[in-house]
Image 1 (cartoon, rainbow, N blue to C red):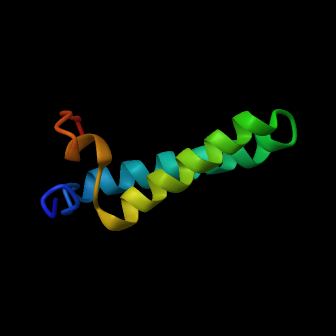
Image 2: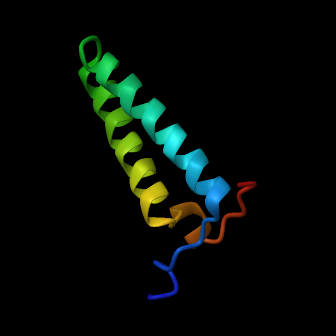
Length: 69
């Protein structure tokens, strides 16, 4: 299980997830005023992407899915 949670992102991937997370978080905050459930989904996805960027760990890569970045 320890190999599953070890960092698997390089600098470029961390930056990409940070940008994606920030955009999702902003979109979610805006959407909460209009469609609550959709806004909450975007906020949760944004926070998770920011967590991935800060920790250097990607869930998709940990599960064996090949990503470009």
